[in-house]
Amino acid sequence: MLSSQDPTLGIRLPVHSSDVRDISIHPSEKFVLTVAFDGKLAMTSLQDKKVALQIVLPPGRRQGWSCTFSESDPYAMYCGFQDGSVAKYDYRKPTAGEQGIVKSFSLPQRQPVHSMKLFKTPEGTEGLAAATFRGLSVWRDVADVANAGNGSVGAPPFLHVPSDQACFSLASNQLHSHQVVVSSRSTPMKHSLFDLRTVGLGRLSPRMEVTGHKAPSVLSRSAMWSEADGTSVVASWSHDVEGVTMWNVATQHEVSGPKPTFLSVTSAAMPVVDIQHVVAQSSWSSAAALLGTMTARQLCVYGSGGWAA
Image (cartoon, rainbow, N blue to C red):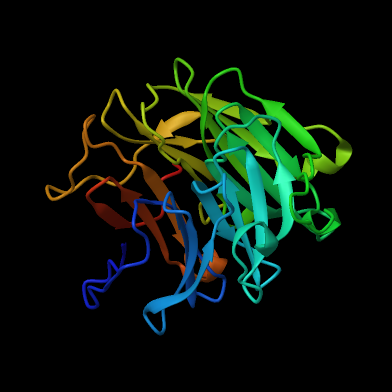
């Protein structure tokens, strides 16, 4: 079920028959892409308020874990599977099974691709970053990957960074897509920040790490963004304090975030499973941004800004 959290709309659309694993909004803001364990990748029209397209996923890869739209190709959709592979689709060619896959990518481990992000390279091409529990894989130019044929082997990553602890989240900076944070279930929890522009140099290592608190036992997506003054902030759910923790990346110190209202329900038994931050019109000149946190039962949205001090 895909629901609108706009209190003036209150729309609920039956899209999937199982829990939605990931959601992505098209750059035009006209469509929403969702994937679930029901074997379907679905694109829903926000204008018509109905499912515009459903693609049946290939046999053997029925569990979709992650999905995203492309910023540079208006027709491209990406889906990450439980077997460590990523497929690119073209929504003008909604063919089921293997025949619908335009390009295919394979990570080193056959593990669920729980997160993926597209980013801009210094050369102006579009790269792909995808994460499993065992690490981060990067392709620096998705256009260079050969078109997929039926049953073809996916392209290996240009670079792979293994994780010695369970990696449970990959998030990127909306204003600087080459900046990503990888969160891992170490003790204490660790957030490694990467600059994907260095991929072209043949190396990829964290430019900074922030640590602290206990990681959740469930998949919980972290977030990363830039404040109006350019300061980078990382946010994640911390199991031990039963709340969202934020760090100023430059100082590696914790900063105060939004204060939960008496209506917000979060606890160790009801953890935040996703954190999202968006700057209106992708520019702080709008002076408007929102921070959202979601549990299994509740979505909370806050006005954002000034948390980097």
